Image 1 (cartoon, rainbow, N blue to C red):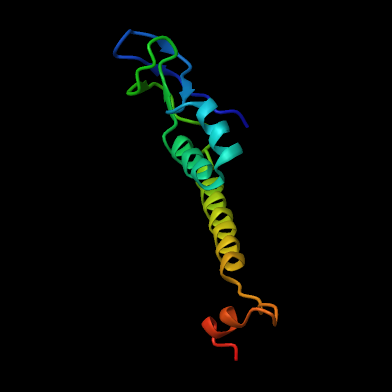
Image 2: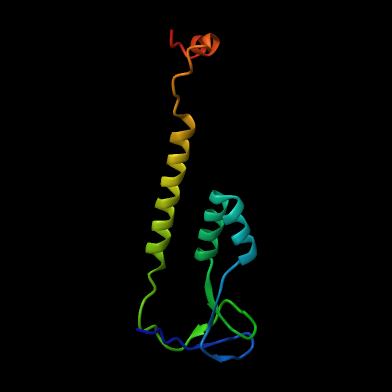
Length: 117
């Protein structure tokens, strides 16, 4: 089903369908995803949660709805899923970073530090 929303912009007087805007930069989001996974996820969540429907002519955020939505948006489920996946990845990274294997027998100083003797 398609959402039918009509708005009126009190800033410029536009009447019609709104446009969805997201804060921040898509290029920065892609850069963060490629080089820094966790900041990329955080930045993506911030951009998703900051989306708004505004005036396509002047990008005014606070437009007046003229007609109700036919369907509802389910972006909250996607956000929760992204947070759970991110926390899982962080937990795996921490688990593997702190997993200690037994050092080779020719390292007596390391064995003494880890109290393996």
